[in-house]
Picture 1 (tube, rainbow, N blue to C red):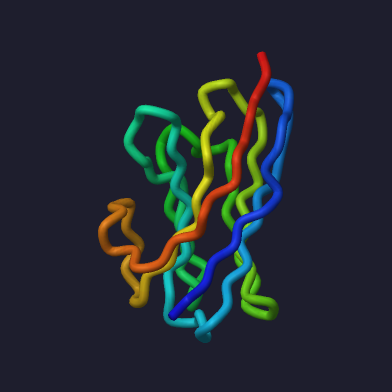
Picture 2: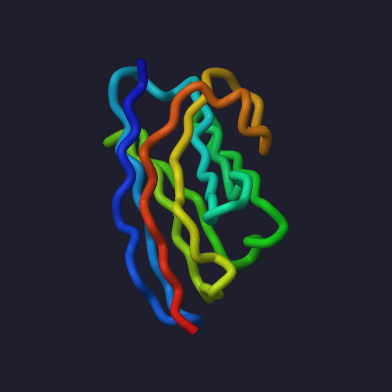
Length: 124
């Protein structure tokens, strides 16, 4: 089992920056892909970014490329999402997710584990 706990959400003005963190525990994550998804009320959960822990390869949704950066630390089993130039459209609950294996995917179904989410609010 892998446990994921998000933190770092909050309120930020449009154009500002915020970093959300995900603490992973339960397994050695070197063979896992960690990802961030987000979901607004009444909408489907959507992919944001993913990182392959073995090679640090990354994948991003087009809507966040150039603004968001996903990083990981094998030393402390953390994954971070640095969000810059935030827009009110980015205001969602951000969820951390994990899957075993090396394939970077933006589909939600392969991710076996997920956290409870962290709220990000962007004021205009």
